Amino acid sequence: MNRQAHPNSSRRGIRGVMKTGALTSIAAAAVAASLPLAAHHSFSAEFDASKEIKATGAVTKLDWQNPHGWIHLTVTEICERAAAGRGPDAVEQEWACRAPDSNEGAADWAFELGSPNGLMRQGWTRNSLKQGDVVTVLGSRARDGSTNSNARSVTTADGKRLFAGSSQDATP
Amino acid sequence: MPKTKTTPDDGSRPSPHLPTGATAVRVALSSLVVLTWTAGASAQWAPVPDPNVPRDAEGNVVLDAPPPRTAAGTPDLSGLWMRTRSGPPPENGGGGGGGGQLEPAQAPVPLDPNGPPIAAFFEAGQNIEGGLPYTPWAKELRDQRFALRARDNPDAQCMPMGFLQFHQQPQPRMIIQTEKLILIEYEANYGLRHIYLDGRELPPQGEPQPWWYGYSVGRWDGDDLVVETNNLRGADEDSPYDGWMDVNGSPYTRQAKFTERFRRPTFGHLQIDLTLEDPKAYTKPWTVRIDQRLLPDQELIEFVCNENQQFERRIKLNQEPASEPSSTP
Image 1 (tube, each protein chain N blue to C red):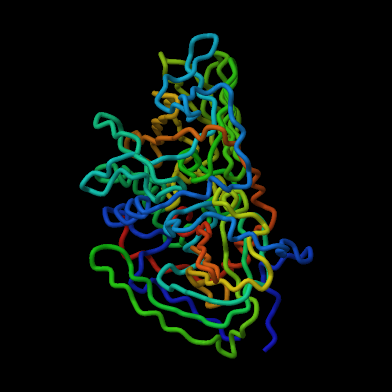
Image 2: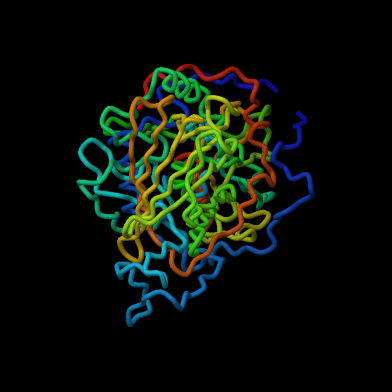
Protein backbone atom coordinates (compact mmCIF):
# COMPACT_ATOMS: atom_id res chain seq x y z
CA MET A 1 0.00 0.00 0.00
CA ASN A 2 1.25 3.37 -0.87
CA ARG A 3 1.82 5.52 2.08
CA GLN A 4 1.65 9.23 2.08
CA ALA A 5 4.72 11.18 2.81
CA HIS A 6 5.20 11.41 6.48
CA PRO A 7 3.70 14.61 7.77
CA ASN A 8 6.86 15.39 9.60
CA SER A 9 9.15 14.79 6.72
CA SER A 10 11.11 17.81 5.89
CA ARG A 11 9.97 19.55 2.79
CA ARG A 12 13.43 20.87 2.28
CA GLY A 13 15.09 17.67 1.28
CA ILE A 14 16.86 15.30 3.48
CA ARG A 15 18.11 17.23 6.38
CA GLY A 16 19.86 15.79 9.27
CA VAL A 17 20.79 12.57 7.59
CA MET A 18 23.52 11.24 9.75
CA LYS A 19 26.97 11.08 8.40
CA THR A 20 29.00 9.52 11.09
CA GLY A 21 28.06 7.47 14.05
CA ALA A 22 29.04 9.17 17.21
CA LEU A 23 26.75 7.42 19.53
CA THR A 24 29.38 5.62 21.44
CA SER A 25 30.90 8.93 22.33
CA ILE A 26 27.75 9.97 23.99
CA ALA A 27 27.70 9.20 27.61
CA ALA A 28 24.04 9.18 28.28
CA ALA A 29 23.56 5.71 29.58
CA ALA A 30 21.13 5.09 32.35
CA VAL A 31 19.33 8.35 31.95
CA ALA A 32 15.97 8.01 33.54
CA ALA A 33 13.30 7.79 30.92
CA SER A 34 10.70 9.62 32.90
CA LEU A 35 12.59 12.86 33.03
CA PRO A 36 11.23 15.40 30.66
CA LEU A 37 13.61 17.27 28.50
CA ALA A 38 12.38 19.78 26.07
CA ALA A 39 8.90 20.49 27.10
CA HIS A 40 6.74 21.30 24.27
CA HIS A 41 3.78 20.14 22.46
CA SER A 42 0.61 18.87 23.86
CA PHE A 43 1.60 15.31 24.47
CA SER A 44 -1.80 14.09 25.42
CA ALA A 45 -3.54 15.70 22.46
CA GLU A 46 -1.33 13.75 20.13
CA PHE A 47 -0.14 10.66 21.92
CA ASP A 48 -1.68 8.08 24.21
CA ALA A 49 0.37 7.40 27.30
CA SER A 50 -1.62 4.21 27.90
CA LYS A 51 -0.33 2.61 24.71
CA GLU A 52 3.34 1.88 24.91
CA ILE A 53 5.38 0.89 21.92
CA LYS A 54 8.83 -0.58 21.56
CA ALA A 55 10.06 -0.64 17.99
CA THR A 56 13.30 -1.95 16.55
CA GLY A 57 14.58 -1.00 13.15
CA ALA A 58 17.17 0.72 11.05
CA VAL A 59 17.51 4.48 11.07
CA THR A 60 16.55 6.07 7.78
CA LYS A 61 16.64 9.70 8.83
CA LEU A 62 17.00 12.01 11.78
CA ASP A 63 15.09 15.27 11.41
CA TRP A 64 17.07 17.67 13.56
CA GLN A 65 14.47 20.37 13.72
CA ASN A 66 12.25 22.46 15.97
CA PRO A 67 10.06 22.20 17.82
CA HIS A 68 10.77 18.48 17.81
CA GLY A 69 13.31 16.23 16.25
CA TRP A 70 12.01 13.09 14.61
CA ILE A 71 13.74 9.79 14.11
CA HIS A 72 12.58 7.68 11.18
CA LEU A 73 12.98 3.92 11.09
CA THR A 74 12.35 0.97 8.84
CA VAL A 75 11.08 -1.33 11.53
CA THR A 76 11.47 -5.05 11.85
CA GLU A 77 9.63 -5.59 15.10
CA ILE A 78 6.84 -3.79 16.88
CA CYS A 79 6.06 -4.52 20.49
CA GLU A 80 3.04 -3.05 22.21
CA ARG A 81 1.52 -3.16 25.62
CA ALA A 82 -0.78 -1.24 27.89
CA ALA A 83 1.07 1.10 30.16
CA ALA A 84 1.41 -0.14 33.68
CA GLY A 85 0.03 3.07 35.06
CA ARG A 86 1.47 4.49 38.20
CA GLY A 87 1.18 3.78 41.80
CA PRO A 88 1.52 0.82 44.09
CA ASP A 89 -1.04 -1.18 42.14
CA ALA A 90 0.69 -0.68 38.81
CA VAL A 91 1.31 -3.96 37.03
CA GLU A 92 3.88 -4.14 34.31
CA GLN A 93 2.37 -5.83 31.28
CA GLU A 94 4.04 -8.24 28.91
CA TRP A 95 5.08 -6.92 25.55
CA ALA A 96 3.23 -8.36 22.55
CA CYS A 97 5.66 -8.35 19.66
CA ARG A 98 5.09 -8.84 15.97
CA ALA A 99 6.32 -7.80 12.57
CA PRO A 100 4.63 -4.68 11.18
CA ASP A 101 1.42 -5.69 9.45
CA SER A 102 0.61 -5.07 5.82
CA ASN A 103 -1.42 -1.98 6.54
CA GLU A 104 1.34 -0.40 8.51
CA GLY A 105 4.24 -1.41 6.34
CA ALA A 106 7.78 -1.43 7.60
CA ALA A 107 8.99 1.86 6.22
CA ASP A 108 8.96 5.26 7.80
CA TRP A 109 7.83 4.77 11.30
CA ALA A 110 8.50 8.06 12.98
CA PHE A 111 9.25 8.87 16.60
CA GLU A 112 9.12 12.33 18.09
CA LEU A 113 12.13 13.51 20.06
CA GLY A 114 12.77 16.63 22.05
CA SER A 115 13.97 19.82 20.43
CA PRO A 116 17.59 20.29 19.34
CA ASN A 117 18.42 22.61 22.23
CA GLY A 118 17.27 20.08 24.77
CA LEU A 119 18.79 17.15 22.91
CA MET A 120 22.13 18.94 22.90
CA ARG A 121 21.98 19.33 26.66
CA GLN A 122 21.46 15.58 26.79
CA GLY A 123 24.55 14.99 24.71
CA TRP A 124 22.95 14.47 21.31
CA THR A 125 24.12 16.07 18.12
CA ARG A 126 22.59 15.89 14.69
CA ASN A 127 25.24 13.28 13.93
CA SER A 128 24.43 11.05 16.87
CA LEU A 129 22.83 8.42 14.67
CA LYS A 130 23.72 7.44 11.18
CA GLN A 131 21.65 5.91 8.47
CA GLY A 132 21.40 2.17 8.95
CA ASP A 133 22.05 2.17 12.69
CA VAL A 134 19.76 -0.34 14.31
CA VAL A 135 18.03 1.10 17.32
CA THR A 136 15.18 0.29 19.65
CA VAL A 137 12.85 3.13 20.49
CA LEU A 138 10.59 3.09 23.52
CA GLY A 139 7.64 5.42 23.55
CA SER A 140 3.92 6.00 23.23
CA ARG A 141 1.73 5.57 20.17
CA ALA A 142 -0.21 8.35 18.51
CA ARG A 143 -3.88 8.60 19.26
CA ASP A 144 -4.75 8.50 15.58
CA GLY A 145 -3.36 4.99 15.19
CA SER A 146 -0.75 6.15 12.72
CA THR A 147 2.86 5.06 12.69
CA ASN A 148 3.84 8.19 14.56
CA SER A 149 4.94 7.75 18.14
CA ASN A 150 6.55 9.74 20.87
CA ALA A 151 9.97 8.49 21.93
CA ARG A 152 11.12 8.39 25.52
CA SER A 153 14.41 6.68 24.90
CA VAL A 154 16.52 5.36 22.07
CA THR A 155 18.78 2.37 22.63
CA THR A 156 21.43 1.39 20.14
CA ALA A 157 22.48 -2.12 19.22
CA ASP A 158 25.46 -1.89 21.58
CA GLY A 159 23.19 -1.03 24.48
CA LYS A 160 23.79 2.69 24.68
CA ARG A 161 20.66 4.49 25.63
CA LEU A 162 19.84 8.04 24.73
CA PHE A 163 17.16 9.92 26.51
CA ALA A 164 14.85 11.18 23.84
CA GLY A 165 13.37 14.17 25.52
CA SER A 166 9.81 13.02 25.59
CA SER A 167 7.24 15.70 25.87
CA GLN A 168 5.14 13.29 27.89
CA ASP A 169 6.02 14.40 31.34
CA ALA A 170 6.44 18.08 30.98
CA THR A 171 4.11 19.38 28.40
CA PRO A 172 0.48 19.90 27.75
CA MET B 1 -5.79 2.94 5.38
CA PRO B 2 -8.19 2.47 8.24
CA LYS B 3 -7.54 4.86 11.02
CA THR B 4 -7.98 3.65 14.48
CA LYS B 5 -10.60 5.75 16.09
CA THR B 6 -9.36 7.33 19.21
CA THR B 7 -10.91 5.76 22.18
CA PRO B 8 -11.21 7.82 25.27
CA ASP B 9 -9.03 7.07 28.17
CA ASP B 10 -8.93 3.43 28.94
CA GLY B 11 -7.83 3.38 32.46
CA SER B 12 -4.79 5.48 31.88
CA ARG B 13 -4.32 8.85 33.35
CA PRO B 14 -6.94 11.24 32.07
CA SER B 15 -5.96 13.78 29.52
CA PRO B 16 -4.36 16.10 29.17
CA HIS B 17 -2.18 15.22 32.04
CA LEU B 18 -2.02 12.30 34.28
CA PRO B 19 -3.52 12.95 37.61
CA THR B 20 -1.04 14.40 39.90
CA GLY B 21 -0.57 13.31 43.42
CA ALA B 22 1.64 11.42 45.71
CA THR B 23 2.21 8.49 43.44
CA ALA B 24 3.22 10.43 40.42
CA VAL B 25 5.52 12.57 42.47
CA ARG B 26 7.11 9.54 44.05
CA VAL B 27 7.65 7.95 40.68
CA ALA B 28 9.19 11.12 39.36
CA LEU B 29 11.42 11.50 42.35
CA SER B 30 12.55 7.91 42.31
CA SER B 31 13.47 8.39 38.69
CA LEU B 32 15.50 11.37 39.66
CA VAL B 33 17.29 9.37 42.27
CA VAL B 34 18.39 6.71 39.83
CA LEU B 35 19.39 9.25 37.25
CA THR B 36 22.98 9.13 36.27
CA TRP B 37 23.88 12.44 34.80
CA THR B 38 26.65 12.04 32.35
CA ALA B 39 25.49 13.88 29.30
CA GLY B 40 26.91 17.18 30.42
CA ALA B 41 30.45 15.97 30.08
CA SER B 42 30.00 15.43 26.40
CA ALA B 43 27.38 17.99 25.56
CA GLN B 44 28.18 19.76 22.36
CA TRP B 45 27.42 23.29 23.48
CA ALA B 46 30.66 23.81 25.31
CA PRO B 47 30.50 25.53 28.69
CA VAL B 48 32.30 28.84 28.87
CA PRO B 49 33.78 29.41 32.32
CA ASP B 50 32.50 32.60 33.90
CA PRO B 51 35.34 34.52 35.58
CA ASN B 52 32.89 36.33 37.86
CA VAL B 53 31.56 33.41 39.85
CA PRO B 54 32.99 32.23 43.17
CA ARG B 55 34.92 28.97 42.91
CA ASP B 56 36.61 26.67 45.35
CA ALA B 57 40.16 25.38 45.05
CA GLU B 58 39.02 22.70 42.63
CA GLY B 59 37.34 25.24 40.41
CA ASN B 60 33.80 24.24 41.32
CA VAL B 61 31.28 27.03 41.56
CA VAL B 62 30.37 27.76 45.17
CA LEU B 63 26.63 27.77 44.81
CA ASP B 64 25.92 28.55 48.44
CA ALA B 65 28.12 31.65 48.43
CA PRO B 66 26.39 34.99 49.07
CA PRO B 67 24.52 36.43 46.10
CA PRO B 68 26.30 38.97 43.94
CA ARG B 69 25.39 42.62 44.33
CA THR B 70 25.27 45.55 42.00
CA ALA B 71 27.22 48.77 42.49
CA ALA B 72 24.02 50.24 43.89
CA GLY B 73 23.95 47.52 46.53
CA THR B 74 20.94 45.54 45.36
CA PRO B 75 21.20 41.83 44.69
CA ASP B 76 22.05 41.02 41.10
CA LEU B 77 19.65 38.39 39.78
CA SER B 78 21.47 37.99 36.49
CA GLY B 79 22.24 34.48 35.37
CA LEU B 80 20.94 31.40 33.62
CA TRP B 81 18.37 29.66 35.76
CA MET B 82 16.73 26.25 35.60
CA ARG B 83 13.60 25.23 37.44
CA THR B 84 14.60 22.96 40.26
CA ARG B 85 13.03 20.65 42.72
CA SER B 86 11.74 21.99 45.97
CA GLY B 87 11.50 19.47 48.64
CA PRO B 88 11.11 17.25 50.38
CA PRO B 89 7.72 16.10 49.14
CA PRO B 90 5.25 16.17 51.99
CA GLU B 91 2.99 13.26 52.78
CA ASN B 92 0.21 14.61 50.62
CA GLY B 93 2.34 14.36 47.55
CA GLY B 94 3.02 18.01 47.19
CA GLY B 95 6.37 19.56 46.75
CA GLY B 96 8.50 18.07 44.09
CA GLY B 97 7.93 20.54 41.40
CA GLY B 98 5.02 18.92 39.70
CA GLY B 99 5.94 17.06 36.62
CA GLY B 100 9.63 16.94 37.05
CA GLN B 101 12.22 18.79 35.15
CA LEU B 102 15.42 18.29 33.35
CA GLU B 103 18.02 18.16 36.00
CA PRO B 104 20.77 15.97 37.27
CA ALA B 105 20.13 14.14 40.47
CA GLN B 106 20.91 16.46 43.28
CA ALA B 107 19.48 17.54 46.53
CA PRO B 108 16.30 19.57 46.25
CA VAL B 109 16.15 23.12 47.45
CA PRO B 110 15.27 23.09 51.14
CA LEU B 111 11.58 23.51 51.77
CA ASP B 112 10.65 26.54 53.83
CA PRO B 113 7.72 25.45 56.00
CA ASN B 114 6.65 29.07 56.30
CA GLY B 115 6.78 29.73 52.58
CA PRO B 116 3.89 29.56 50.15
CA PRO B 117 2.97 26.25 48.50
CA ILE B 118 5.33 25.03 45.82
CA ALA B 119 4.01 25.58 42.33
CA ALA B 120 3.35 22.58 40.12
CA PHE B 121 3.82 22.60 36.38
CA PHE B 122 0.73 20.82 35.19
CA GLU B 123 -1.70 21.86 37.90
CA ALA B 124 -0.76 25.15 39.47
CA GLY B 125 -2.77 24.51 42.61
CA GLN B 126 -1.62 20.96 43.19
CA ASN B 127 0.00 21.88 46.49
CA ILE B 128 -2.60 24.41 47.59
CA GLU B 129 -4.98 22.97 50.11
CA GLY B 130 -8.33 22.63 48.39
CA GLY B 131 -6.82 23.52 45.04
CA LEU B 132 -7.10 26.83 43.27
CA PRO B 133 -10.03 29.05 44.34
CA TYR B 134 -11.69 29.09 40.94
CA THR B 135 -14.80 31.09 40.28
CA PRO B 136 -17.50 28.96 38.61
CA TRP B 137 -16.69 30.62 35.29
CA ALA B 138 -13.01 29.77 35.58
CA LYS B 139 -13.66 26.22 36.70
CA GLU B 140 -15.85 25.59 33.70
CA LEU B 141 -13.27 27.01 31.33
CA ARG B 142 -10.47 25.07 32.93
CA ASP B 143 -12.46 21.84 32.59
CA GLN B 144 -13.23 22.58 28.95
CA ARG B 145 -9.54 23.09 28.23
CA PHE B 146 -8.66 19.93 30.11
CA ALA B 147 -11.22 17.88 28.20
CA LEU B 148 -9.64 19.05 24.95
CA ARG B 149 -6.33 17.68 26.21
CA ALA B 150 -4.92 21.16 26.51
CA ARG B 151 -4.43 21.36 22.79
CA ASP B 152 -4.78 25.15 22.93
CA ASN B 153 -2.08 25.55 25.51
CA PRO B 154 0.09 28.35 24.12
CA ASP B 155 3.22 26.23 24.49
CA ALA B 156 1.79 23.73 22.02
CA GLN B 157 1.28 26.61 19.59
CA CYS B 158 4.77 28.12 19.97
CA MET B 159 3.24 31.15 21.65
CA PRO B 160 4.13 32.98 24.84
CA MET B 161 3.04 31.19 27.97
CA GLY B 162 1.65 32.54 31.18
CA PHE B 163 4.35 33.61 33.62
CA LEU B 164 3.86 30.63 35.90
CA GLN B 165 4.24 28.17 33.05
CA PHE B 166 7.22 30.10 31.71
CA HIS B 167 8.89 30.03 35.12
CA GLN B 168 8.46 26.27 35.34
CA GLN B 169 9.25 25.29 31.78
CA PRO B 170 12.12 22.79 31.78
CA GLN B 171 14.11 24.98 29.45
CA PRO B 172 16.20 27.61 31.20
CA ARG B 173 15.73 31.34 31.38
CA MET B 174 18.30 34.11 31.37
CA ILE B 175 17.90 37.12 33.62
CA ILE B 176 19.79 40.20 32.50
CA GLN B 177 19.71 42.94 35.12
CA THR B 178 20.63 46.55 34.52
CA GLU B 179 20.00 49.52 36.73
CA LYS B 180 16.76 50.63 35.08
CA LEU B 181 15.62 47.53 33.24
CA ILE B 182 15.54 43.79 33.75
CA LEU B 183 15.10 41.40 30.88
CA ILE B 184 13.99 37.81 31.32
CA GLU B 185 14.65 35.75 28.25
CA TYR B 186 12.98 32.36 28.31
CA GLU B 187 14.59 29.76 26.10
CA ALA B 188 11.14 28.25 25.65
CA ASN B 189 9.48 29.88 22.65
CA TYR B 190 11.91 32.79 22.84
CA GLY B 191 9.87 34.47 25.53
CA LEU B 192 11.11 37.93 26.46
CA ARG B 193 9.90 40.16 29.25
CA HIS B 194 10.83 43.75 30.01
CA ILE B 195 10.61 44.85 33.63
CA TYR B 196 11.04 48.58 34.17
CA LEU B 197 12.98 49.64 37.24
CA ASP B 198 13.07 53.38 36.59
CA GLY B 199 10.47 54.26 39.16
CA ARG B 200 7.52 54.53 36.86
CA GLU B 201 4.10 53.62 38.12
CA LEU B 202 2.12 50.61 37.04
CA PRO B 203 -0.38 51.91 34.47
CA PRO B 204 -4.11 51.60 35.07
CA GLN B 205 -5.66 48.31 34.06
CA GLY B 206 -6.78 48.63 30.46
CA GLU B 207 -4.26 51.33 29.60
CA PRO B 208 -2.36 50.57 27.48
CA GLN B 209 -4.17 47.80 25.68
CA PRO B 210 -3.50 44.23 26.83
CA TRP B 211 -0.37 42.45 25.64
CA TRP B 212 0.89 38.89 25.83
CA TYR B 213 3.49 39.93 28.42
CA GLY B 214 1.46 42.73 29.93
CA TYR B 215 3.21 45.72 31.46
CA SER B 216 5.74 45.04 34.22
CA VAL B 217 7.18 47.45 36.76
CA GLY B 218 9.74 46.44 39.37
CA ARG B 219 11.02 47.96 42.61
CA TRP B 220 13.33 46.79 45.34
CA ASP B 221 11.89 45.94 48.73
CA GLY B 222 15.02 45.25 50.74
CA ASP B 223 16.67 42.36 48.93
CA ASP B 224 13.44 41.34 47.19
CA LEU B 225 12.66 42.52 43.70
CA VAL B 226 8.92 43.08 43.55
CA VAL B 227 7.52 42.97 40.03
CA GLU B 228 3.94 43.91 39.35
CA THR B 229 2.31 43.19 36.01
CA ASN B 230 -1.07 44.06 34.58
CA ASN B 231 -2.58 44.78 31.17
CA LEU B 232 -2.32 41.19 30.06
CA ARG B 233 -4.33 39.55 27.34
CA GLY B 234 -6.74 37.16 29.00
CA ALA B 235 -8.75 34.01 28.58
CA ASP B 236 -11.97 35.97 28.76
CA GLU B 237 -11.61 38.28 25.78
CA ASP B 238 -8.71 37.20 23.62
CA SER B 239 -7.73 33.99 21.84
CA PRO B 240 -8.08 30.38 23.02
CA TYR B 241 -4.33 30.50 23.63
CA ASP B 242 -4.49 33.42 26.05
CA GLY B 243 -4.64 33.31 29.79
CA TRP B 244 -3.16 29.94 30.69
CA MET B 245 -1.66 29.65 34.17
CA ASP B 246 -0.66 26.03 33.84
CA VAL B 247 -0.61 23.16 31.41
CA ASN B 248 -3.99 21.83 32.43
CA GLY B 249 -5.73 25.10 31.67
CA SER B 250 -6.25 27.15 34.83
CA PRO B 251 -7.07 30.56 33.38
CA TYR B 252 -6.30 34.18 34.01
CA THR B 253 -8.20 37.08 32.53
CA ARG B 254 -7.71 40.68 31.54
CA GLN B 255 -8.37 41.55 35.16
CA ALA B 256 -5.23 39.69 36.22
CA LYS B 257 -2.55 41.38 38.25
CA PHE B 258 0.60 39.42 38.95
CA THR B 259 3.00 40.20 41.76
CA GLU B 260 6.27 38.33 41.65
CA ARG B 261 8.83 38.56 44.43
CA PHE B 262 12.26 37.54 43.19
CA ARG B 263 15.00 36.86 45.70
CA ARG B 264 18.41 35.26 45.50
CA PRO B 265 19.16 33.70 48.90
CA THR B 266 22.47 32.28 47.72
CA PHE B 267 24.63 32.54 44.66
CA GLY B 268 23.06 29.46 43.14
CA HIS B 269 19.43 29.79 44.20
CA LEU B 270 16.64 32.01 42.92
CA GLN B 271 13.23 32.02 44.51
CA ILE B 272 10.11 33.44 42.92
CA ASP B 273 6.88 33.86 44.84
CA LEU B 274 4.10 34.51 42.38
CA THR B 275 0.76 35.94 43.44
CA LEU B 276 -2.23 36.23 41.14
CA GLU B 277 -5.09 38.58 41.84
CA ASP B 278 -7.84 38.02 39.30
CA PRO B 279 -11.36 38.43 40.67
CA LYS B 280 -12.97 37.16 37.50
CA ALA B 281 -11.15 33.83 37.67
CA TYR B 282 -10.44 33.35 41.37
CA THR B 283 -12.41 34.12 44.48
CA LYS B 284 -9.27 35.25 46.30
CA PRO B 285 -5.60 35.90 45.52
CA TRP B 286 -3.26 32.93 45.68
CA THR B 287 0.49 32.52 45.86
CA VAL B 288 2.89 29.78 44.87
CA ARG B 289 6.67 29.49 44.98
CA ILE B 290 9.04 28.49 42.19
CA ASP B 291 12.65 27.61 42.95
CA GLN B 292 15.38 27.99 40.38
CA ARG B 293 18.94 26.73 40.35
CA LEU B 294 21.80 28.57 38.68
CA LEU B 295 23.37 26.93 35.62
CA PRO B 296 26.85 28.42 35.88
CA ASP B 297 29.06 28.56 32.82
CA GLN B 298 26.14 27.69 30.55
CA GLU B 299 24.19 29.62 27.98
CA LEU B 300 20.84 29.72 26.33
CA ILE B 301 20.54 27.63 23.20
CA GLU B 302 18.50 28.74 20.24
CA PHE B 303 14.96 27.41 20.05
CA VAL B 304 13.01 28.56 17.01
CA CYS B 305 9.74 26.88 17.73
CA ASN B 306 7.97 27.63 14.48
CA GLU B 307 10.61 26.07 12.27
CA ASN B 308 8.54 23.01 11.53
CA GLN B 309 5.50 23.40 13.67
CA GLN B 310 3.09 20.68 12.58
CA PHE B 311 1.25 20.04 15.78
CA GLU B 312 -2.20 21.11 14.64
CA ARG B 313 -1.87 19.15 11.45
CA ARG B 314 -0.89 16.02 13.26
CA ILE B 315 -3.56 16.09 15.91
CA LYS B 316 -6.20 16.84 13.25
CA LEU B 317 -7.80 19.68 15.11
CA ASN B 318 -11.27 18.90 13.85
CA GLN B 319 -11.30 15.51 15.48
CA GLU B 320 -13.90 14.98 18.10
CA PRO B 321 -12.82 16.18 21.49
CA ALA B 322 -11.83 13.86 24.21
CA SER B 323 -14.38 12.76 26.70
CA GLU B 324 -14.67 14.58 29.93
CA PRO B 325 -11.93 13.42 32.23
CA SER B 326 -13.15 11.09 34.88
CA SER B 327 -11.26 12.79 37.61
CA THR B 328 -9.48 16.00 38.13
CA PRO B 329 -6.40 16.53 40.18
